[in-house]
Length: 192
Length: 298
Image (cartoon, rainbow over all chains, first blue to last red; front, side, top):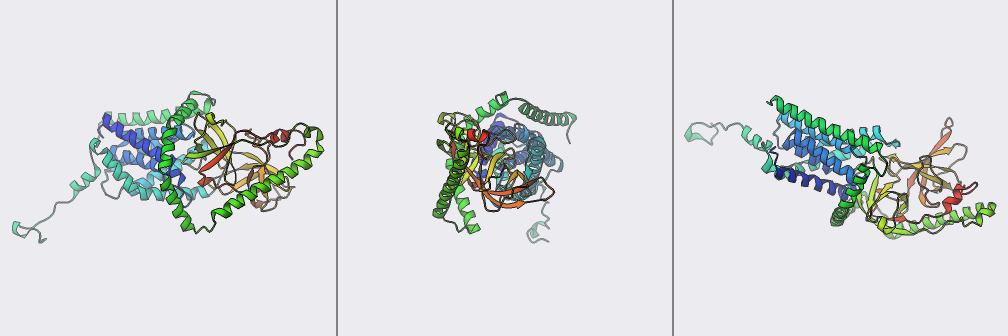
């Protein structure tokens, strides 16, 4: 990712909108006991297209903003989202994936990592109450909802970050398409 | 694929962010409520409050649509009129039972009776929920009324049906409310008509099942009885809720002969997952004072 002022502004605006949208609307819409979480999707998408460094920076910023606005324990969300952003970014850098449907598993795995790690951090820090088994159901619902939302969110983030991307995975996909085999000049198109 | 500098830079960035997060966490736990990070948090909340309010209003049709679809799928057959009537009757019943119990007990402490220890009227401030915590681990909402409207820390908050939580921080125009389903919440409560007392604690992740803990095994609690706030201070030093606010209804009692305490399951009256409007009781009743005195408030 090309680090420029424009890129910083775009990513900052993206994270701000994601956090405000999350706490103002999506958190209040319960579906089967859970709710979608676009914050982790925004961080994962930034990391997927930008790499590990922008991913971890986006995760830290989004987590800090979330903790600031919700009054939760400061540092907990940023700690987990930093790790999520870095992990997704490293996955992209190491594996260099290019399949068009990859946002689905990436979004689901990032969400799973977020809810599980955040649960662990919360339990270690200051949750003294009993934990209902229904928490697991909520986590699963959130992961499934985020998997459904991943494709449009990743597409939107890709368009938003487009001017700042050094390498676009989808462009890679086009490049990797095997060259079309053709016969002699007069028989092209007849798959000879 | 990458040179050593790139790898070093990448690892350094990760280490810096992780270290920063841990430093913030440690500092946050170490400082008092008036510390720098808490102040920054309140400042950020106040700054973003207009944006959140606007977003909440703008997205309300969308939320309503989703809620409507959900209700249709669930085939809920309750109608608004009956709900309102049940809520009103429930409040009336709790109020009548509280008054009766207060009258019987205050006869025995005539001296205290002279000191105006009856529950005083509270002054409710109606507020709209403008933001909600996105995780099940921190169950809190933000409301669009703050210290400028008379809202103060530790004041109780009620929603349609019963107790919702208490104010944990307030800025000029907003306030943060910790719901009774939050992992850190603890509400002193008593069961009617038995008078058994305990502490209502949540089960994280299940807002429809609260637990009344520290209930002595010797005093039986029956199902479908009413649970209201007792006015006592809980063991965690929570604020005093005025006595008589309905909390929920007993659904099940886990009774083990080997245990000293029995565990009472309560279904809260307030639907805290779909709370849009709440009331902050900005002037707490003085019944809590009576309850804290010897023999007062059972």
